[in-house]
Image (cartoon, rainbow, N blue to C red):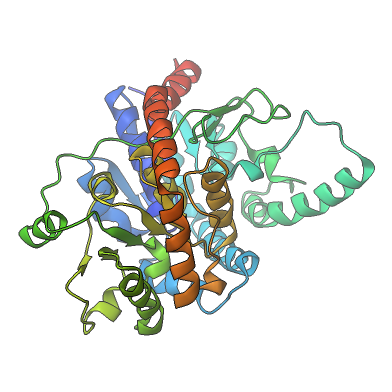
Length: 400
Protein backbone atom coordinates (compact mmCIF):
# COMPACT_ATOMS: atom_id res chain seq x y z
CA UNK A 1 0.00 0.00 0.00
CA UNK A 2 1.44 3.36 -1.07
CA UNK A 3 1.72 5.96 1.68
CA UNK A 4 1.16 9.65 1.00
CA UNK A 5 0.95 12.83 3.05
CA UNK A 6 -0.70 16.15 2.22
CA UNK A 7 -0.37 19.40 4.20
CA UNK A 8 -2.57 22.50 3.96
CA UNK A 9 -3.18 25.66 5.98
CA UNK A 10 -6.00 28.20 6.12
CA UNK A 11 -9.79 28.16 6.18
CA UNK A 12 -12.11 25.31 5.25
CA UNK A 13 -11.84 26.33 1.61
CA UNK A 14 -8.10 25.58 1.79
CA UNK A 15 -8.73 22.17 3.35
CA UNK A 16 -11.78 20.82 1.50
CA UNK A 17 -10.14 20.13 -1.91
CA UNK A 18 -7.59 17.91 -0.17
CA UNK A 19 -10.33 16.02 1.68
CA UNK A 20 -11.86 15.17 -1.70
CA UNK A 21 -8.44 14.11 -3.04
CA UNK A 22 -7.60 12.10 0.10
CA UNK A 23 -10.86 10.14 -0.04
CA UNK A 24 -10.34 9.23 -3.69
CA UNK A 25 -6.73 8.20 -3.03
CA UNK A 26 -7.93 5.97 -0.20
CA UNK A 27 -10.50 4.33 -2.52
CA UNK A 28 -7.55 3.46 -4.74
CA UNK A 29 -5.54 1.79 -1.99
CA UNK A 30 -3.40 4.66 -0.74
CA UNK A 31 -2.72 5.22 2.96
CA UNK A 32 -3.24 8.97 3.40
CA UNK A 33 -2.26 11.41 6.13
CA UNK A 34 -3.70 14.92 5.90
CA UNK A 35 -1.95 17.54 8.03
CA UNK A 36 -3.42 20.92 8.95
CA UNK A 37 -4.34 23.23 11.84
CA UNK A 38 -5.50 21.28 14.93
CA UNK A 39 -8.91 23.00 14.59
CA UNK A 40 -9.63 20.89 11.49
CA UNK A 41 -9.18 17.53 13.24
CA UNK A 42 -12.94 16.84 13.52
CA UNK A 43 -13.66 17.80 9.89
CA UNK A 44 -10.86 15.60 8.54
CA UNK A 45 -11.37 12.62 10.83
CA UNK A 46 -15.13 12.60 10.18
CA UNK A 47 -14.22 12.16 6.51
CA UNK A 48 -12.38 8.97 7.54
CA UNK A 49 -8.90 10.40 6.90
CA UNK A 50 -5.88 10.04 9.20
CA UNK A 51 -5.14 13.50 10.62
CA UNK A 52 -1.80 15.02 11.65
CA UNK A 53 -1.97 18.28 13.67
CA UNK A 54 0.43 20.86 12.27
CA UNK A 55 1.21 24.18 13.95
CA UNK A 56 -0.48 25.92 16.89
CA UNK A 57 -4.11 25.34 17.86
CA UNK A 58 -5.49 28.59 16.49
CA UNK A 59 -9.02 29.99 16.36
CA UNK A 60 -9.35 30.04 12.57
CA UNK A 61 -12.43 32.30 12.59
CA UNK A 62 -10.70 34.91 14.75
CA UNK A 63 -7.51 34.73 12.68
CA UNK A 64 -9.41 35.05 9.39
CA UNK A 65 -11.34 38.05 10.70
CA UNK A 66 -8.13 39.69 11.91
CA UNK A 67 -6.37 39.09 8.59
CA UNK A 68 -9.30 40.52 6.64
CA UNK A 69 -9.61 43.42 9.07
CA UNK A 70 -10.49 46.78 7.58
CA UNK A 71 -8.05 46.52 4.66
CA UNK A 72 -9.92 47.38 1.47
CA UNK A 73 -7.01 46.75 -0.92
CA UNK A 74 -7.24 43.13 -2.19
CA UNK A 75 -3.46 42.98 -2.78
CA UNK A 76 -2.70 44.00 0.82
CA UNK A 77 -5.30 41.52 2.10
CA UNK A 78 -3.64 38.79 0.06
CA UNK A 79 -0.20 39.69 1.41
CA UNK A 80 -1.52 39.55 4.98
CA UNK A 81 -2.95 36.09 4.29
CA UNK A 82 0.29 34.86 2.73
CA UNK A 83 2.38 36.17 5.63
CA UNK A 84 0.12 34.36 8.10
CA UNK A 85 0.37 31.06 6.21
CA UNK A 86 4.12 31.35 5.57
CA UNK A 87 4.82 32.04 9.24
CA UNK A 88 3.04 28.86 10.31
CA UNK A 89 4.72 26.82 7.56
CA UNK A 90 8.15 28.00 8.67
CA UNK A 91 7.46 27.39 12.34
CA UNK A 92 6.02 23.92 11.62
CA UNK A 93 8.78 22.51 9.44
CA UNK A 94 9.96 20.03 12.10
CA UNK A 95 6.42 18.62 12.45
CA UNK A 96 6.04 18.42 8.67
CA UNK A 97 9.41 16.68 8.34
CA UNK A 98 8.45 14.02 10.89
CA UNK A 99 5.15 13.27 9.11
CA UNK A 100 6.98 13.03 5.76
CA UNK A 101 9.29 10.29 7.04
CA UNK A 102 8.40 6.92 5.55
CA UNK A 103 5.99 8.30 2.96
CA UNK A 104 6.17 7.13 -0.65
CA UNK A 105 4.93 10.41 -2.13
CA UNK A 106 4.09 13.90 -0.88
CA UNK A 107 1.21 15.83 -2.44
CA UNK A 108 2.38 19.43 -2.19
CA UNK A 109 -0.60 21.74 -1.74
CA UNK A 110 -0.98 25.22 -3.20
CA UNK A 111 0.98 26.76 -0.29
CA UNK A 112 3.98 24.50 -1.12
CA UNK A 113 3.84 22.87 2.33
CA UNK A 114 6.04 19.80 2.46
CA UNK A 115 8.03 20.56 -0.69
CA UNK A 116 11.32 21.35 1.05
CA UNK A 117 10.95 18.58 3.61
CA UNK A 118 10.17 16.01 0.89
CA UNK A 119 13.26 17.17 -0.99
CA UNK A 120 15.47 16.71 2.07
CA UNK A 121 14.15 13.16 2.49
CA UNK A 122 14.36 12.32 -1.21
CA UNK A 123 10.61 11.65 -1.51
CA UNK A 124 8.96 12.34 -4.90
CA UNK A 125 6.27 15.02 -5.02
CA UNK A 126 3.16 15.98 -6.96
CA UNK A 127 2.02 19.60 -6.85
CA UNK A 128 -1.46 21.11 -6.69
CA UNK A 129 -2.08 24.67 -7.94
CA UNK A 130 -5.42 26.43 -7.45
CA UNK A 131 -4.52 29.75 -9.07
CA UNK A 132 -3.54 29.47 -12.71
CA UNK A 133 -1.83 32.88 -12.47
CA UNK A 134 0.83 31.22 -10.29
CA UNK A 135 1.91 28.81 -13.05
CA UNK A 136 4.97 29.97 -14.94
CA UNK A 137 4.81 30.33 -18.72
CA UNK A 138 8.05 28.42 -19.21
CA UNK A 139 7.47 27.91 -22.95
CA UNK A 140 6.89 31.58 -23.74
CA UNK A 141 9.86 33.50 -25.21
CA UNK A 142 11.14 35.88 -22.50
CA UNK A 143 12.10 39.48 -23.14
CA UNK A 144 14.86 41.12 -21.10
CA UNK A 145 12.18 43.02 -19.13
CA UNK A 146 10.29 39.76 -18.44
CA UNK A 147 13.45 38.19 -17.05
CA UNK A 148 14.27 41.15 -14.80
CA UNK A 149 10.75 41.66 -13.41
CA UNK A 150 10.13 37.93 -13.17
CA UNK A 151 13.41 37.41 -11.34
CA UNK A 152 12.56 40.06 -8.74
CA UNK A 153 9.10 38.58 -8.08
CA UNK A 154 10.43 35.01 -8.02
CA UNK A 155 13.09 35.95 -5.47
CA UNK A 156 10.46 37.47 -3.14
CA UNK A 157 8.17 34.43 -3.44
CA UNK A 158 11.09 32.09 -2.72
CA UNK A 159 12.10 33.89 0.50
CA UNK A 160 9.94 31.93 2.99
CA UNK A 161 10.98 28.60 1.47
CA UNK A 162 14.65 29.59 1.65
CA UNK A 163 14.20 30.18 5.38
CA UNK A 164 13.08 26.56 5.67
CA UNK A 165 15.95 25.38 3.46
CA UNK A 166 18.44 27.06 5.82
CA UNK A 167 17.13 24.86 8.65
CA UNK A 168 18.36 21.81 6.70
CA UNK A 169 21.61 23.41 5.50
CA UNK A 170 20.41 23.71 1.90
CA UNK A 171 21.43 26.41 -0.56
CA UNK A 172 18.77 29.05 -1.37
CA UNK A 173 16.72 28.78 -4.55
CA UNK A 174 16.08 31.70 -6.87
CA UNK A 175 12.47 30.72 -7.51
CA UNK A 176 9.78 28.58 -5.88
CA UNK A 177 9.64 26.73 -9.22
CA UNK A 178 12.87 25.01 -8.17
CA UNK A 179 11.11 23.17 -5.34
CA UNK A 180 8.08 22.16 -7.41
CA UNK A 181 7.55 18.69 -8.82
CA UNK A 182 9.28 18.17 -12.14
CA UNK A 183 6.71 15.52 -13.12
CA UNK A 184 3.14 16.61 -12.31
CA UNK A 185 1.21 19.71 -11.26
CA UNK A 186 -2.53 19.12 -10.78
CA UNK A 187 -4.89 22.03 -11.44
CA UNK A 188 -8.38 21.20 -10.07
CA UNK A 189 -10.24 23.53 -12.44
CA UNK A 190 -12.44 22.65 -15.41
CA UNK A 191 -11.21 23.15 -18.95
CA UNK A 192 -14.72 24.44 -19.67
CA UNK A 193 -14.00 27.40 -17.38
CA UNK A 194 -10.28 28.04 -17.96
CA UNK A 195 -8.49 27.35 -21.22
CA UNK A 196 -5.14 25.61 -20.99
CA UNK A 197 -2.29 28.09 -21.42
CA UNK A 198 -0.23 27.06 -24.48
CA UNK A 199 2.92 28.29 -22.72
CA UNK A 200 2.57 25.85 -19.81
CA UNK A 201 4.85 22.86 -19.55
CA UNK A 202 3.22 19.48 -20.21
CA UNK A 203 3.29 18.58 -16.49
CA UNK A 204 0.57 21.19 -15.75
CA UNK A 205 -2.78 19.41 -16.09
CA UNK A 206 -6.33 20.77 -15.77
CA UNK A 207 -8.14 17.83 -14.18
CA UNK A 208 -11.59 19.32 -13.62
CA UNK A 209 -12.96 20.39 -10.22
CA UNK A 210 -12.63 18.07 -7.23
CA UNK A 211 -15.84 17.32 -5.38
CA UNK A 212 -17.91 14.42 -4.18
CA UNK A 213 -21.60 14.02 -3.65
CA UNK A 214 -22.21 14.53 0.06
CA UNK A 215 -24.10 11.79 1.86
CA UNK A 216 -27.80 12.60 1.74
CA UNK A 217 -28.32 15.75 3.80
CA UNK A 218 -31.51 15.98 5.82
CA UNK A 219 -32.44 19.60 6.62
CA UNK A 220 -34.04 20.40 9.93
CA UNK A 221 -37.76 21.17 9.96
CA UNK A 222 -37.29 24.94 10.09
CA UNK A 223 -35.05 25.01 7.00
CA UNK A 224 -37.21 22.51 5.11
CA UNK A 225 -40.36 24.53 5.80
CA UNK A 226 -38.69 27.79 4.81
CA UNK A 227 -37.53 26.37 1.46
CA UNK A 228 -41.03 25.06 0.75
CA UNK A 229 -42.87 28.23 1.77
CA UNK A 230 -42.18 30.41 -1.26
CA UNK A 231 -39.98 31.29 -4.23
CA UNK A 232 -36.40 30.10 -4.37
CA UNK A 233 -34.33 32.21 -1.96
CA UNK A 234 -31.14 34.15 -2.51
CA UNK A 235 -28.27 32.50 -0.63
CA UNK A 236 -25.71 34.71 1.12
CA UNK A 237 -22.59 32.61 1.70
CA UNK A 238 -19.50 34.73 2.28
CA UNK A 239 -17.56 31.83 3.81
CA UNK A 240 -14.46 32.89 5.74
CA UNK A 241 -15.20 36.50 4.81
CA UNK A 242 -18.20 36.38 7.16
CA UNK A 243 -16.05 35.16 10.08
CA UNK A 244 -16.18 37.79 12.81
CA UNK A 245 -13.86 38.89 15.58
CA UNK A 246 -16.80 41.00 16.76
CA UNK A 247 -20.33 41.71 15.60
CA UNK A 248 -20.59 43.16 12.08
CA UNK A 249 -24.17 44.40 12.17
CA UNK A 250 -23.51 47.23 9.75
CA UNK A 251 -22.31 44.83 7.05
CA UNK A 252 -25.20 42.41 7.56
CA UNK A 253 -27.68 45.32 7.53
CA UNK A 254 -26.54 46.21 4.01
CA UNK A 255 -27.54 42.79 2.70
CA UNK A 256 -30.77 42.49 4.70
CA UNK A 257 -31.97 45.93 3.61
CA UNK A 258 -31.02 45.21 -0.01
CA UNK A 259 -33.01 41.96 0.12
CA UNK A 260 -36.01 43.83 1.60
CA UNK A 261 -35.98 46.48 -1.10
CA UNK A 262 -35.66 43.97 -3.95
CA UNK A 263 -38.30 41.63 -2.52
CA UNK A 264 -35.90 38.69 -2.08
CA UNK A 265 -36.36 35.75 0.22
CA UNK A 266 -32.95 34.86 1.62
CA UNK A 267 -30.94 32.23 3.48
CA UNK A 268 -27.87 33.61 5.26
CA UNK A 269 -24.82 31.55 6.24
CA UNK A 270 -22.22 32.94 8.63
CA UNK A 271 -22.25 36.14 10.72
CA UNK A 272 -22.56 33.96 13.82
CA UNK A 273 -21.73 36.68 16.36
CA UNK A 274 -24.00 39.23 14.70
CA UNK A 275 -26.85 36.73 14.48
CA UNK A 276 -26.90 36.13 18.25
CA UNK A 277 -29.14 39.16 18.81
CA UNK A 278 -30.22 39.99 15.24
CA UNK A 279 -33.88 39.69 14.25
CA UNK A 280 -34.36 38.76 10.60
CA UNK A 281 -37.56 39.51 8.64
CA UNK A 282 -39.96 36.57 8.19
CA UNK A 283 -38.86 36.01 4.59
CA UNK A 284 -35.21 35.49 5.62
CA UNK A 285 -33.51 32.90 7.82
CA UNK A 286 -30.06 32.04 9.07
CA UNK A 287 -28.60 28.58 8.64
CA UNK A 288 -25.45 27.03 9.98
CA UNK A 289 -23.27 24.31 8.52
CA UNK A 290 -25.35 23.14 5.56
CA UNK A 291 -23.41 21.51 2.69
CA UNK A 292 -23.31 23.55 -0.50
CA UNK A 293 -24.09 20.39 -2.48
CA UNK A 294 -27.59 20.58 -0.98
CA UNK A 295 -28.05 24.27 -0.24
CA UNK A 296 -27.02 25.67 -3.60
CA UNK A 297 -29.56 23.46 -5.36
CA UNK A 298 -32.32 25.16 -3.35
CA UNK A 299 -31.42 28.75 -4.23
CA UNK A 300 -32.12 31.12 -7.09
CA UNK A 301 -28.64 32.64 -7.00
CA UNK A 302 -25.83 32.91 -4.46
CA UNK A 303 -23.90 35.93 -3.22
CA UNK A 304 -20.45 34.69 -2.20
CA UNK A 305 -16.86 35.70 -1.54
CA UNK A 306 -15.52 33.72 -4.49
CA UNK A 307 -13.16 31.49 -2.57
CA UNK A 308 -11.90 28.54 -4.61
CA UNK A 309 -14.28 25.95 -3.14
CA UNK A 310 -17.41 28.10 -3.19
CA UNK A 311 -16.74 29.25 -6.75
CA UNK A 312 -16.34 25.64 -7.85
CA UNK A 313 -19.55 24.65 -6.01
CA UNK A 314 -21.62 27.26 -7.89
CA UNK A 315 -20.49 25.66 -11.15
CA UNK A 316 -20.79 22.04 -10.03
CA UNK A 317 -24.29 22.56 -8.60
CA UNK A 318 -25.49 24.91 -11.32
CA UNK A 319 -26.36 28.21 -9.64
CA UNK A 320 -25.65 31.76 -10.94
CA UNK A 321 -23.88 34.12 -8.60
CA UNK A 322 -22.90 37.59 -7.49
CA UNK A 323 -19.20 37.50 -6.53
CA UNK A 324 -18.05 39.74 -3.66
CA UNK A 325 -14.27 39.14 -3.61
CA UNK A 326 -12.31 40.40 -0.60
CA UNK A 327 -8.74 39.35 -1.49
CA UNK A 328 -6.74 39.04 -4.69
CA UNK A 329 -7.13 35.33 -5.45
CA UNK A 330 -10.90 35.67 -4.98
CA UNK A 331 -10.88 38.42 -7.60
CA UNK A 332 -9.28 35.96 -10.01
CA UNK A 333 -11.96 33.32 -9.41
CA UNK A 334 -14.68 35.99 -9.72
CA UNK A 335 -13.28 36.99 -13.11
CA UNK A 336 -13.38 33.34 -14.25
CA UNK A 337 -17.09 33.09 -13.38
CA UNK A 338 -17.96 36.35 -15.08
CA UNK A 339 -15.94 35.40 -18.17
CA UNK A 340 -18.13 32.32 -18.80
CA UNK A 341 -21.28 34.40 -18.08
CA UNK A 342 -22.52 32.56 -15.00
CA UNK A 343 -22.03 35.52 -12.66
CA UNK A 344 -22.23 39.29 -12.61
CA UNK A 345 -19.11 41.40 -12.71
CA UNK A 346 -17.49 41.32 -9.24
CA UNK A 347 -18.71 43.65 -6.51
CA UNK A 348 -15.49 44.42 -4.65
CA UNK A 349 -15.73 44.24 -0.87
CA UNK A 350 -14.51 47.83 -0.55
CA UNK A 351 -17.48 48.98 -2.65
CA UNK A 352 -20.12 47.18 -0.57
CA UNK A 353 -23.17 49.29 0.23
CA UNK A 354 -26.92 48.82 0.25
CA UNK A 355 -27.10 50.59 -3.11
CA UNK A 356 -24.37 48.55 -4.82
CA UNK A 357 -25.89 45.27 -3.60
CA UNK A 358 -29.31 46.32 -4.93
CA UNK A 359 -27.71 47.20 -8.28
CA UNK A 360 -26.10 43.74 -8.52
CA UNK A 361 -29.36 41.98 -7.60
CA UNK A 362 -31.13 43.90 -10.36
CA UNK A 363 -28.30 43.06 -12.77
CA UNK A 364 -28.48 39.32 -12.12
CA UNK A 365 -32.28 39.33 -12.32
CA UNK A 366 -32.12 41.07 -15.72
CA UNK A 367 -29.73 38.41 -17.12
CA UNK A 368 -30.93 35.50 -15.01
CA UNK A 369 -32.30 33.18 -17.68
CA UNK A 370 -29.10 33.34 -19.74
CA UNK A 371 -26.83 32.86 -16.70
CA UNK A 372 -28.93 29.97 -15.40
CA UNK A 373 -28.82 28.21 -18.76
CA UNK A 374 -25.05 28.74 -19.03
CA UNK A 375 -24.25 27.47 -15.53
CA UNK A 376 -26.44 24.37 -15.96
CA UNK A 377 -24.72 23.59 -19.26
CA UNK A 378 -21.25 23.98 -17.69
CA UNK A 379 -22.33 21.90 -14.70
CA UNK A 380 -23.20 19.00 -16.98
CA UNK A 381 -19.84 19.24 -18.75
CA UNK A 382 -17.94 19.39 -15.45
CA UNK A 383 -19.57 16.15 -14.36
CA UNK A 384 -18.13 14.39 -17.43
CA UNK A 385 -14.56 15.31 -16.44
CA UNK A 386 -14.43 13.35 -13.17
CA UNK A 387 -11.86 15.78 -11.81
CA UNK A 388 -10.74 14.01 -8.64
CA UNK A 389 -10.81 10.60 -10.34
CA UNK A 390 -8.61 11.97 -13.12
CA UNK A 391 -6.21 13.48 -10.55
CA UNK A 392 -5.76 10.14 -8.79
CA UNK A 393 -5.31 8.35 -12.12
CA UNK A 394 -2.42 10.68 -12.92
CA UNK A 395 -0.90 10.21 -9.45
CA UNK A 396 -1.14 6.42 -9.84
CA UNK A 397 0.71 6.62 -13.16
CA UNK A 398 3.68 8.13 -11.31
CA UNK A 399 3.63 5.80 -8.34
CA UNK A 400 2.97 2.35 -9.85
